[in-house]
Image 1: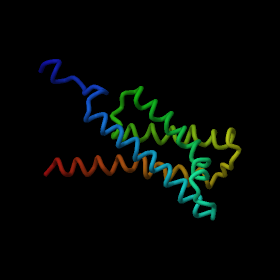
Image 2: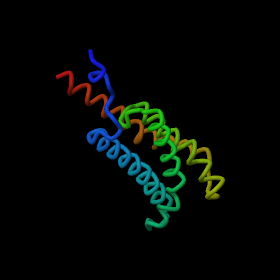
Image 3: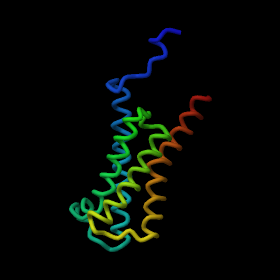
Length: 138
């Protein structure tokens, strides 16, 4: 086997870049949906500014998670990347929400946020990996 055959695709590989962009977009959408659903369930206005004010700590945490997964060179669609993105979103987002934004972080909110983000950021990758393996087995 030559080194050419074992080489991992470059970050600048167009296919990998599109996959990474799609995965990042889906993660951002997951965070925005979490915020919109939460705001609606609490009777808060759905104005774009309100969503932005509520979402920014989690989007910043997601950005930290993405920086870490790219630094670790994890494939963005992998379960490992989902775990890192989820961890960044919650472990960075919650302290930002509490200490910088001055918003609440009651235990129930932390649990709900962690479950939602885990389901939609990590769970999406688990599900797509499972589907891909099932299709490949056919």
